[in-house]
Amino acid sequence: MAELRKLTDEGVEFKSHLDGSAHWLTPESVIGVQDRLGSDIWTALDECPPYPCSEETSIEALTRTERWAERAHAEFKKRTQEIDGLRPLFFPILQGSQSPALRKRAALHALTLEPDGVCLGGMSVGEPKPLMWDTVAAATEHLPADKPRYLMGVGAPEDLWEAVERGVDMLDCVFPTRVGRNGTALVRDGRVNVKTGKYRTDPRPLDPDCGCFVCKRYTRAYLSHLMRSEELSGYRFLSFHNVHYLMDLMKEIRSAIEANRFSEAKTAFFDRIRAASPAAS
Image 1 (cartoon, rainbow, N blue to C red):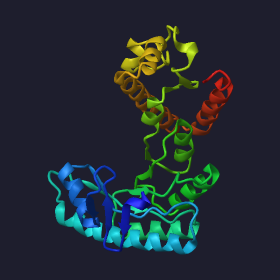
Image 2 (spheres, rainbow, N blue to C red; image 1 turned 90 degrees about the vertical axis):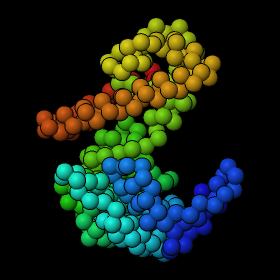
Image 3 (cartoon, one colour; image 1 turned 180 degrees about the vertical axis):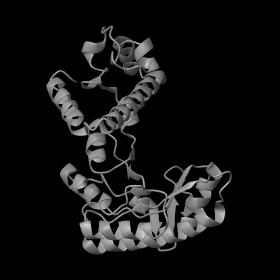
């Protein structure tokens, strides 16, 4: 979106891709939007640098993000008060590109803002997956265990296991709905694309082990028909199923941690996916 925005230390001016109108965002106005929405978790305006970028660019973006977080926190405190023991939560965003030193600096700065939790930003912006996981580990290393760590923009099934292993508690991503709109369903043995010809007459549910309403009511053949016909309900059904699948997967991960068998469960998951991958399409 670089061509649609003007960035300054004061804030960001976005130009609408629909009508060209200007929209001004500041750390304070972003907090105000979350206030009006009634959000449970409030975060701060940040600058996410591209990958790759120079150290100078990374430092400049981090410095601006830190100043914005301070302003956002001040506005947060003005607007919130505890009622019956409840109030919104403040989660500043950590930047720092792929530099362990900058990630440490970002983590230590965030902790000065008395956060309820911390967002890990700037991941999955084009860097190789191994580098991304090294960066996640470098960020979480300096965060206390009692502050939830929220990894932004990462959410494939395989990513959930890798992220949790590195100390992540929460994730979100457009992944389940994006692949669903393209006809792909996440299943226990990997993925199936119902738009392919072999599913036109398949009487099975998407995933026989899934308890979502889509798997209880509809066959792969019917969902294949909906997607090939570009029926809007097809996009909705696959998106719902995919989100349900990921929620169940997180429950599985949580149960494995509680049973002290995370490593075994992770290995079993990846073995299952690898064994089924030739059949998935």
